[in-house]
Length: 152
Image (cartoon, rainbow, N blue to C red; front, side):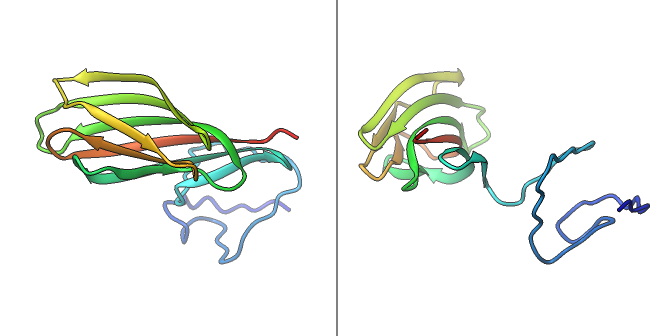
């Protein structure tokens, strides 16, 4: 089947082809333009060899620890990329890379990328919940969490 429509898609309800249901594709998918995902998480792989990727944005992180990432029951480990910006237009920024498992977490990198942001404290739970608190001010934090499943 070949369709001749050329309407550009700018949302889930526009374009040459629009469906209210899901789409199953048994073979390869080629995208010649930009691919956008309106959900913050997606999975790649087959069977037990899957990886999950999730993007979250947490507004108003302060000295009270808040969840910034969470694994699920199929996740054995993951890497969380953390990017924080002080929300007062001062331009202070920090970056972190944290390994997260059900046994805890390890901060691989925790660095200042601009200005002099306050100290950060990461904590985790056995349910692979990663929490962050920042010693001073209020921060907006974006995380990119690449989760890995058991390769059995």
